[in-house]
Length: 188
Image (cartoon, rainbow, N blue to C red; front, side):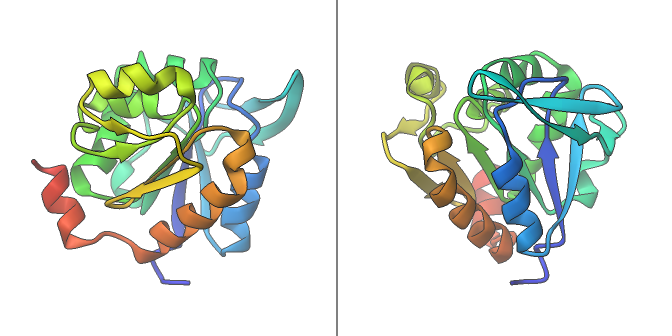
């Protein structure tokens, strides 16, 4: 693994992100330092299919988090989690930093909703949960129905069934770090 895989950001909101246990475990197995950032302090609880899942300690609130100290961003899915994030100015500003600087971003399921709010999806090839197809197309993205899509450092996947492929590509892209062409494309 590249030295870039050292300080990874997981952005969660209050409660209800889709269960992110496999994502966090994959990052930690790759020797990443994982911080959980949320709209609230304390703990967040994930949702696993039809019941509450795991609890995660929040390392920092998004209002107080400094995006410059992180190498990458991971946006978990679920419906309520990304919906709350995209309506929060601090969360959108935080995510915008990663879009503008070309740092690697991984988003699964409904996670791309927050990316749409940054105005940075235009011209990107992405996938997501099928119900976001029109939202992403209207924002200028090229939406495709594939297990995992990589476009200039962004990794997107459709649903929890795609987690294995998502985690593999996420770690690969984060390990590569920032590429010059990503920064140029992000500033367009």
